[in-house]
Image (cartoon, rainbow, N blue to C red; front, side, top):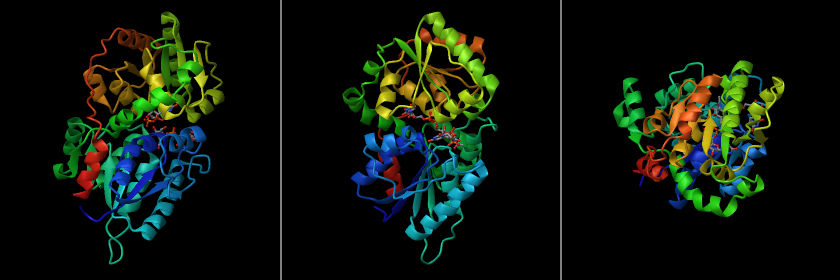
Length: 370
Ligand code: UD1
Ligand code: UDP
């Protein structure tokens, strides 16, 4: 095994969740690592709750660079780079692991590329988990982050062969690409028994299996546009009324802020609740009749948990879910949301999971250490 020191960088809810299996393997194998939390997400329900319930070690470095303390994304990324660089120079890791497509991921990757190798500083290899995803939609801040990070990474861990193909077409050398699945499968497998034991959300909300629809929304292009946001609420409530099912809506803080700003009223059929912890959320997903979402992770989880999903966007960077039949792309126009949701209510739940066998984290660490 190579002598390595790993830096793990995370900052948002999905990164904390999807890097948990990787951190667990590093701990199991006694590999030297430290964690930097950029603080991009900072509210208790978006951050602390996961450390507590997933028994994650506290980050070694906690930055506070969420959007409440900066004005613009550029400033946020610049501040993150400034702080991460100082930590890299002190800790001298030889690998940095980042996951996904957030501003935190972009800042982590850029920080590593800008430190020259020297006598007392190794070159920092960038390992990107969930590489190769593309929505081909340049209006999404995440699309730019993904493309830049993939092109400056040394090791690219793609979930399926589809993303390998995308990276090859972009000219990235095949020798850098490893198809390993997605760590979210590991996470779900490691959590299902605990969900059973620890989650009481169905009881608390008086919900029955298949007796409700689950909704999440947070994409900039949806909730920062009054027209798109209102259209989605209109389409979702019309559909929910037509099938007489309550909608449970754990609301992302960004979405809540914009709901208030645009003064959009929620009809009674949509029940807004605070964001919930991971075990409660998996329980809400597992038992839902249907999931409506614009989240990337939720499209994957619904596919893995065999619950039909309707994506409230015009595209997806997770086309595997559409190919296997667990997901349809509805967009944001009410009539299309109705049509797609009706279709997914009758779909047979017999697709197979394209995201791997739950051993993704182990494969990643094996590849990085041999
Ligand atoms: C970010 C990521 C997105 C990812 C999502 C996961 C970028 C550009 N976007 O979007 O790719 O899918 O995280 O959830 O990196 N807020 C709080 N408390 C928090 C976090 C956010 O109140 O803990 C509010 C703030 O008002 C903030 C807004 O949400 O301004 C947006 O937060 P930000 O981190 O910029 O983007 P997300 O929409 O969370
Ligand atoms: N999630 C959660 N509580 C919630 C909503 C979502 O724990 O109230 C989890 C969900 O299980 C998934 C992840 O958050 O693993 C998805 O994060 P999000 O939708 O914020 O981001 P994206 O995946 O779109 O980047």
